[in-house]
Length: 205
Length: 235
Image (cartoon, rainbow over the protein chains, first blue to last red):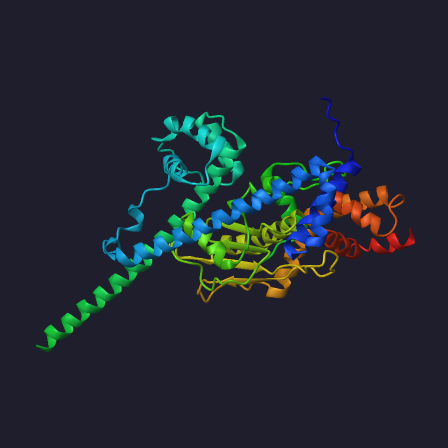
């Protein structure tokens, strides 16, 4: 069937109807929603637009529920397994993040789904062992340059997810290092304080 | 110290290596511009600073919840540390509002936060720096004339922070940045000349806001700011 392209006016009319519907949806204005839906019954493209937006809403709500569970698990781990924080490594000893760190995180990331997941699986073999350090510029443009340097052609979507994952990892590493440095500083200060007290006691005795 | 808005936007295009907008290509591609910096942009339904904090915790970007995070509804939010920034916008807002929120937060990032971090004031390499800005939801009225307002917070306790502009000025600058980025004066003037004869009164606002993918409120504000509204009245 020869499907005609919508005219500019038709497109604008549909966008306006969609905006009216979403506005009514947010306000719980069922009368207006009903009017737009009647219009959508005669216009399959408008109907598709409305259903796509509603599906996106539903997907996001499910994502939100998972987020709160993960936060709870993190808090419990910190409370129940404090021994992991007893040994404090030197910040300088922590190696820089590499391409393989980002790939490893992406493999377990629930946000990586569908065709991007499939594409990721194809590049994993080549990048899983990569010790190439992450560049300073982790934005989309920096990541494009990185993939060129690695000699790999990947989709924009994968580049975007790689960029996001690298930025989240880098931010977490920065905060982790700040915590380590602060804890080590605190320990050293209390050790110095104890040493001084011991010396004073020895001198007095 | 904040650089001029025009210069900051010119830098933005230069870093992203994309051409400036024209009358024919008047919709600004924000994701391309953001891609020049260490920035992420995420849409969240029911955006609050607490929801943003939970998202960053879940993605491993922070290890502790953001200080002072709360349940106050927001239109936009940005969390910045020394190496990156993370922009959030309310997903259920209209596209045009989301674009303005992103542009507003991007304005804070390039005008205020990035220069502050680059100034070298945070001398301790491993000192934790957290800067946030929370943008309040806009008026529910599509044609409301007020632009959104936000609130900046710097968690860093260094006493020798350089003097940032007053918060009200930073908010005004972020709004001006967003307006100039999404509705560049050169493009607006040409479009007004092009459409004014066929689109009398509010029709011109409708037409220009559709062409540039911005809200009618933002377009009205911009035309008023550029003194283009008396021209409309004449038509």
